[in-house]
Image 1 (tube, rainbow, N blue to C red):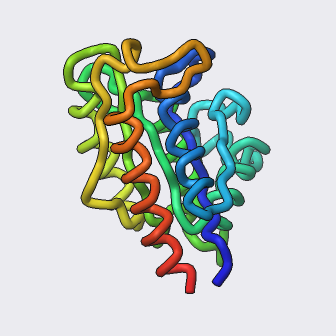
Image 2: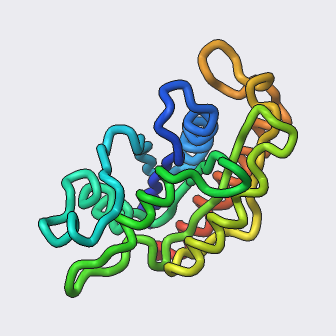
Length: 189
C-alpha cells in the first residue's frame, strides 16, 4: 500500500497566523504517521476573488494549482480561523475556486477525507466557524471526519519556534492527524 497523499492548508493569509502554525503541527504529525504531506499557503497562490467573468478568461494559475493538488490528494488537513463566527473570506474564496470543474474533470474536494482544525487566542478556539466549514465541504462532496479540534488560547501553547509546547494539546492534534491518515489509507487501497 502506498502512503496517502495529504494536503495541509490554513484559511489565513497572515504571516504569523496561529492557524498556519496549527496546521504545520498537524502536517508534521501526519508525516510521522506515514503520509506524504504537502503544506500549501494560500498567500502563495495569489487567488483573485472568485468571479465567473475572471474564470471565463481562464482559471488563474494559483487556482488551477490548488485544484490539481487537491485532486491528487487522498486527504486534507484544514485549519480555519474564525471571523465573526464563521469562515474567513480567503478560505471561502479558495474553496470556491477549487470547487469549479472543467469539462470532464473530477471536483477537487469530491471524496477527499478532511480533518478540521481551528485555533484562536479566544476561549472557544474558533469552534463556531468549524460548523460552517463542515457544511460547505460536505456539500461539495468532501468526507469530513466527525472529530474536529478547536484550540483555544493558542498563543499560550506555542514555543518560540511556533510548535505546540503543551503535551495534551499536541496529543490531540496528533490524534486527529493520525485518524485522517488512517482513513485516507483505507480509501487509498
